[in-house]
Amino acid sequence: MIELVLLYCLVSDAHHCMERHENVGRELNPMECIMTAQQYGQEWVTGHPQWRLAGWRCERDRPRESPA
Image 1 (cartoon, rainbow, N blue to C red):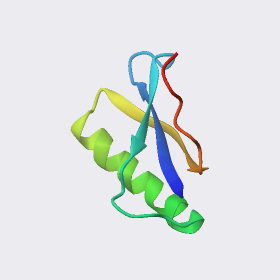
Image 2: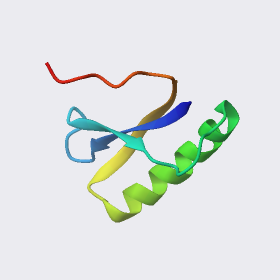
Image 3: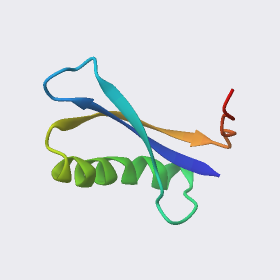
């Protein structure tokens, strides 16, 4: 399974960033992940203008980290 991970940083402080794991609603292949990343990022930024899309990546079969 491939998961879309978007990185957002505050417009006012480029060192304050966060990652969001997007739920696309279906499984993506690598090309779909790359092609939809900017669209999902822009939609989120439109509703959160204090943030900017700083990057994205497509992760394959990454296990969730369990709390320590």
